Every structure is written in C-alpha cells, then in structure tokens.
Image (cartoon, rainbow, N blue to C red; front, side):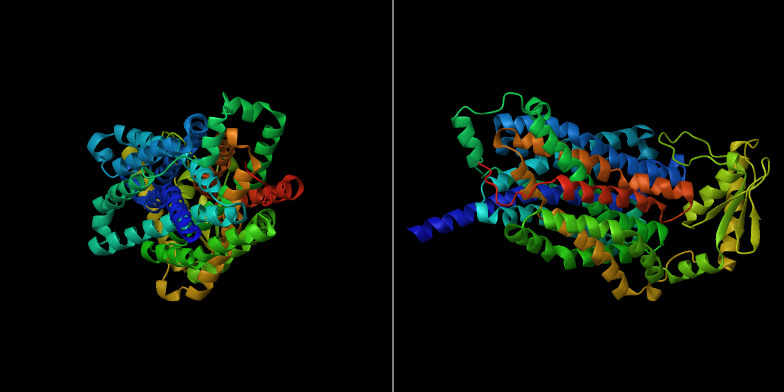
Amino acid sequence: MATADTEIDRRKMTLVVAASSAGTVFEWYDFFIYGSVAPIIAKHFFSAAGETQGYILTLLTFAAGFFARPFGAIVFGRLGDRTGRKRTFLVTITVMGLATFLAGLLPDARAIGLAAPWLLVALRVAQGFAIGGEYGGAAIYVAEHASHERRGAATGWVQLSASIGLILALGIILVVQRAMGDAAFADWGWRIPFLLSAILLGISLWIRLRLDESPLFQRIREEGRLAHAPLREALLEPANLKTILIVLVGILMGQGVVWYLAQFYTLFFLQHVLKLDLAHATAFIMEVTVITLPFYAFFAWLSDRMGRKPLMLAGLLVAALATFPVFRMLTESVNPALAAAAEHSPVTVVTAPAECSLQFNLTGTAKYVTSCDIAKAALTNAGIPYRNDAAPEGSFARVRVGTQDVASQDGRTLNPADLAAAKKDFARRLDVALTAAGYPAKADPAAVDTARTLLLLTILGLAAAALYAPQAAALVELFPTRIRYTALSLPYHVGVGWFGGFLPAAAFAIVAATGNIYAGLWYPVVIAGLGFFVSLLLLPETYKRSIE
C-alpha cells in the first residue's frame, strides 16, 4: 500500500510541476519570439521613426510589458492570497496566451497606420500584466506541494522551464525561417511563431484544470487565517518590508539583468552589433541553452544540500566580473574583421559638442538634423564603434575613418526630401570609407571561432543558471504563507520586469549615445555588483526553513 501511495504522490507531483512550469515556458517563449524578431517588428510597426529610433521604440514596446508586471503582481497577488493559487494562475495563463496569439494577427502600420503600434503596446501591456501573477503562483504552488528536503530541486524545474521556452521559441523561428526563406519570413512569416502559441495555451489549460488547490493554502483557509489585505501586510509590517527590499536589491534586480544579458542581450549583440546573421546567432544561443540546461537542475538540487545563498552569490559575482571581458572577446571571435578594423582604423566623430543630441527618442517625433546627429545615426545604424573628439563651435561634424575624413552636412535648413537625400549621400560616402578601411558589412560565418564563442556565451549562461536555479525556493522560504503570493510577486516583477526588462532598450540607447559598443554593459554590471554586496551582507540563508 505504501508503494502505491508513493506512486500516486509521485504522479501528482509530476502534474504539479508540469502545470506550473507550463506558464514559465509560455512566458519565455513569448519573450524570445518577440526579442528575436524585434528588428522585423520595428520595420512593420515603427518604420516612420527611422531605423535606430524604430528599433529603440520596438524595445521600449517590449519593455512596456515589463513595466506592467508589478501592477499585475499586486492584482493577482491579492487574488492568489485571498482566493487561491489554482484559480489565479488559470486566469494568468489565459490572458498571457491570448495576448501572444493576437500579436500574430495584428495588422501593421501599412494597413492601419498609427493604430498598429498602439495596439501592439496594448497587447504587450496585457501580456506583462498577466505575467505579474504567473511566476509567483507557479513557484509557490510547486514549493507548497514539495517535501522539505526536495524543495529546491522541485522548484528548479520551474526555473529550468525558462530555458525550454527559449529553445522552443528559437527552434520554431529557425524552422519557419528556413522553410520559407528570409524575405517571406520578414514579410509575414514572423507571425507564425506567435500563432503557434495557441497550441501551447491549450496544453497549459488542459493540465492546469486537472489540479487541486495548494495544501498549505487550503489549511490556512480552513483555519480562517487568510490575509485580509495582503499588500498592506507585506509593505507596512517592518519585517516583511525589510525582506522585500533585500530580495529586490540583492537578488531580483541582479537576476533580471544577468538572465536577460545572458539569454537576450547576447543575441542582440551578435546580430545588431557584430552583424552575424539571424540563423547563426540564433543557433549559438540555442546551443548554449542546451549546454546550460542540465545545470539548472543541478544547481537547484545542490541548493538543497549546501544552501541557496552561495550559488546566487556566485552567479552575481561571475556576471559582474566577466561581462566586459566576455563581450570584448566575443567581438574578436565572432567578427575578427570588425575588431581588426576598429583597432587599426578607428572611427572618430569630430564635432562641436553642442551640435549633438542624445539619440534616445521615446516618442519617435524628434528630428535629428544637425551634422553631428546625421553622422552618429549613420554610424549607429551601421553598428560601427566610434570615439568622440571636440571641434570648434560652429563647425560641422566630420567622421574620421583611419586617416580619411567624411564630411557630414547640416540638415536644419533642408526640406524633408533634400534632408533624406543628404542622409543617404552621407551614408553612401561613409560606407565607401569604411569598406576601404576594412570594416565588414556583415560578419563572415566562416571566420567565426565557434568553440571560443560557445565557451564565452556559456560562461554567462552558467552565471545566470547559478543565480536563477535556487531562487524560486529561496523566495518562497522568505515569506509567510498568508501573504506569500503578493510579497513574492511584487519585488520579483519590479526587479526582473523593470530592471531586467529595460535592459535591451537602455543598453542600446547608451551605445547609440556614446558610440561605444560595450558602454551599455555598465547597466547589468553595476546592478549585479550591487546585488552581490547586498546579498552577501543582508540576505539570510533559508534552505533549512519550514514554509508552513
């Protein structure tokens, strides 16, 4: 009889893990679909803003979903703490799935004009709002079913499922793109991965409808110990607020930037900066994800034996120390021609500082018409690193490529047609100078050092795994059952949603403003370093705590 009961318990736990992990797979599937086709989305929805600003607006639309996450955490956190875990994440998975699916049906700007980008923003916000209640519910539901000795290993499957979502997303993109060709994929094929999410939604709902409520939640409900105002209890009781602030600054802000750095910004860097084609860049990220996938399970299992804190500290420290060296070596291994040209024929923008604008246009309405703006926009669009050198006030900008100067024209007095022609002429002359100096238009796949590239990307991937794998168990163990959904979800989605979600847009804007292709890395490095010291000094170890 004991054996039969054990088998029933094992089957039930498998269903609990599968149901909870399905939402995380869905979350990251959507994340990587959107991130991978962001350059294509920019051309369909934000082409009127120009190439650089259109891409930034696409990333900001992406970030709008992350901005909505903490608000979803407040709403769904209260629902989860008041009415139950199961009911709440049935709602969240449904809203998430519909928002992703409808993105594949959305007409672009050519069809419906300005309504298209606004509808895209609305879908991203809805998706982010629902995710605000998804992760906390999944982690809590698994932890509240798991035994004390295997809580880390059990919740580790929720963490691991993020990588499964990545593999699924990138795999579908590769298959669809290769089946229909680059031109058709860029025209309409990019919609197919969004539409295929309907299958994932159906499976997720089918599994979740078979679940029972969490046993710990059932117990406090039967005992009449439910929180009447979970948010107020979480934020106004000093002990709870202190814990929320420690986990926010110590591990969650860091986890947001480290994970997105390793899994998403690397893809952006390979494509947009190093000019590696989408197929090869995507293949690299998929291979690294497959390599690091077992380590999520291993680190989660290890956290049940040596603690959560040492592993999370290791992930933060490696990310803070290795990011700059890794990305510099990536340039040498992926696009050696670019690295050599930048060293032997550096590009310098010589201009009066007053001529230059900060090329970070949130609304897409700013006009970059000075000679400096025209020069820097062309260099940013080409993915060329450059330095800045001051010139006398009143002089027009010029771009020095090695020993050759390319003069930029001031466009403030030109009509729109002449301004467009001037920009095109400057870009053509700049391209001639760059080609003569050895700057490649694209990375040569045959020149890529594959083994070295995989090793470098794996370093960042392992740092993300060490930080992320034990995190769900640690968060559950830090908060009491009656407010756990709210107290866990809110800091998670502030840290991961706001600080992590804005990483791509913020880092790209920093690169566009400075001309330094590595300058955007300061954003994740500083946050990871801060998280390391806060966690080292203030975060308690929790792996031996009871969560009842």
